[in-house]
Length: 522
Image (cartoon, rainbow, N blue to C red):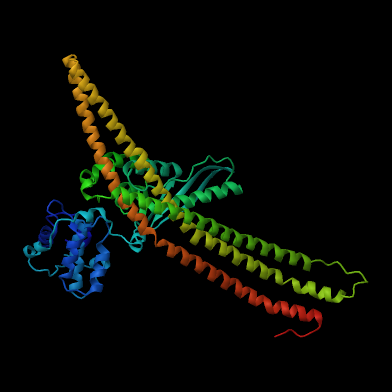
């Protein structure tokens, strides 16, 4: 069996027997997945160098739940075999194996059973993530494709390009709206970013304010998609793959059908009904402390964004002022009016005007450099701040959904159950009709079942909230990325503008000396 065939479909009859035996020896007893810690032990037993082990691990670690899928484990075995042959353990090298995948040298499969252990409780709750690995999951680009009917805007369409799936699809805002709605239903206990407002368009596309709004919405949709595509749980879901890859015209129907097949995460997550067992005893205290900390971070980053926006606006304003300054110089140099006879500097003024003509071009270059600086500050600094703030706002929304949704519904169910129990006791004491008592008993049983489900959902909500809090903290090092982008933009901008100013300086000195009749200063 080739590696490509293995990747497309796992057919147990065609996978090499040794691969199946090793997998059976180390996988979880109640699951086909392999715990990352078990795989790490297996990797260390190969005696390959640390660098090679790290390279193999990076090529197979995709999920954030601490487990390898069967396919990922088979791929890892093939990479180990390649490395043992002295070759580079990369997916591209595996593609060169046309006939059969190589066999790793790991010893007898039965002896590998000692590596297996049951998943530790803490592992199910802990996300094995760092920011660099997270950002490598995907990069989604959203471009505006306006479609016009005459001079007026018919609708706005977006071209979505995913680096991970290496393809482009076209979407309208209504597609985003349906996608967001279903994503929120599917992952109600996770940080689902908000969509920018739709706002009905009243003017034509070339209207400045309308154009600004459309551009801001395009950027916001791009941030939304990137946060979704980078999320450790969303990114592996069929909904996200459908939105990023389906090229048909009925994407909304496809999304709804995909959700109908799976339901919400509580139904599909294997930890949903046992989430309580994994929660630390002080989960509520941890949640309160983390929420307050993230709230403070949100406030600080909001202020950072305000300052960054003002810096970018000043760069754009500087660009406009430099351009207008150059134009005024050009206007001045074009004035052919003669000075009156009483002016003693007629010839000097004429020469000066002639010399000024070439300087307006230099100011246009300066204006362009300042405009580029403003765009860099917008794209590299402000936009990254917006991305992180969108994520933080999503976390705040999630906390509110947890408190006002799950907890509130649970409390209402408890109150209703209590009322029904008291009513039952009253009817029994007063010897009401047997049929009425039986009906009430049936309703109480139904309410007990509903209450049990709500309690399970409450614990699962806390379970997910704990993981999403970890995700927020995983993103915190993006601060360094933003600051580096800010410094780089300033260095580049000042260097480019400094070069033009340095070229202008001798021209002004020469201009001054020529019109004063003296030699230019060195």
